Image 1 (cartoon, rainbow, N blue to C red):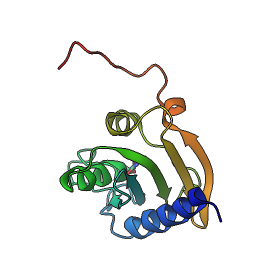
Image 2 (image 1 turned 180 degrees about the vertical axis):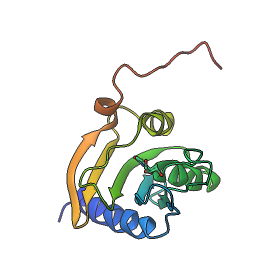
Image 3 (image 1 turned 60 degrees about the vertical axis):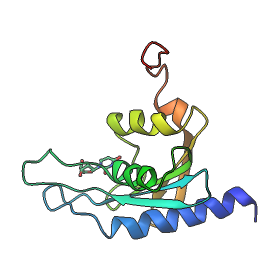
Image 4 (image 1 turned 60 degrees about the horizontal axis):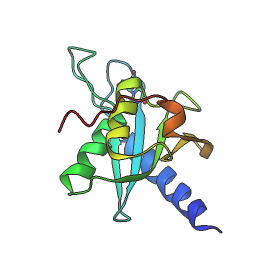
Length: 136
Ligand code: THU
């Protein structure tokens, strides 16, 4: 098995187990995400909602928070899974947040309940993304 296939399986497992920890009583739409950071560690997240829906946040955002709090700022690969959707692509806000720590070639693995069904690049999800060297 190739090295990237190993990552896909581990990221799928992590995203699926993260989804079980979601707090989604309003949408009833559980989502899980897993990030492979540059240090080789996987950081997990699930969506967390509050009663003033839509004042919640996405699984990807939770995972990014865990990664950053662990001192990591480089995303190598991501997996996303939703209980009720076979290919859950990150929302617009999460695409921008992922772009903060990844790059155009960062792989995003879209999963169903059994594994990765499609892999896309962040640059394809967020083309012509905002960037400037004026803000420093
Ligand atoms: N959601 C995510 O967690 N990630 C996505 O990529 C898409 C949407 C969540 C947000 C909200 O809790 C629920 O799914 C329904 O939109």
